[in-house]
Image 1 (spheres, one colour):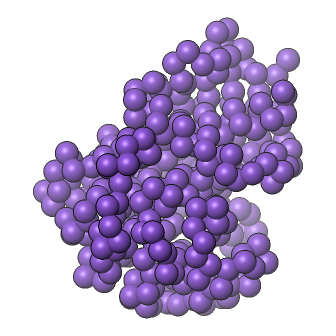
Image 2 (cartoon, rainbow, N blue to C red; image 1 turned 60 degrees about the vertical axis):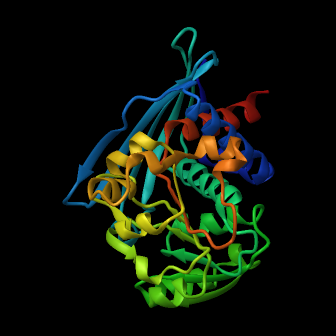
Length: 319
């Protein structure tokens, strides 16, 4: 019988279990992906101009595993103005042996948010400078908050600068009780953030560069989360030319529609400069060598993350 898992059950699993365990599961997924042990077809994508919004359909399986997963996740960016969450969707878990539907996880986009935040933590764990002086968060939405929450296990830094265009949203962010462990300063001047932060995470649906090459300090690590579809962009392509290390969750995917694509298509960097995150996790020689290097992780979201987090929740509730 198909197990229906509700959002409240999903949140209960995530909150009761250690973030470190989930981060580890996502790490293992990236390593398997980079070793070609995961079958991940091209992402299905629907874009809506009137709303505006987009829908991503990601799916795949680990070779030799018991399951395969199909994930549907949407983002409709005007929803908050009518009292709805931006994200929605579900995860579908099937038997790899029989094709039976084992579980429907009615996560409403929550697991996509969580696995994305966990991926940001993985990138920071292996690429951030040894001493993070201040964390910069570009954006004020759900993912911006979650990135901070999931950075807690991988850095001791609690000083944060958050950039946004809307003063009201910045005020709400600063006073969010879930972020009480951080000392948060807000700004509408992105140069104020880049001048002071050496770990920066971008979390917006921007369609033009927000972080400019001339404003990034030596030693900075940037995790770019927002450019997960054609036309989105958060990073000045010239910054990739300055970077000592460029990492992608999926090299092919990021060259197609991540921030990397602007640098590769503009002949600023060759695609051979880009290394996959799974290889960085496994090989310390591919990581940052000193605290003067600029590093970039371009994360567009890969189905292996959805496979890992779906299994994580399902097994927690059925074992």
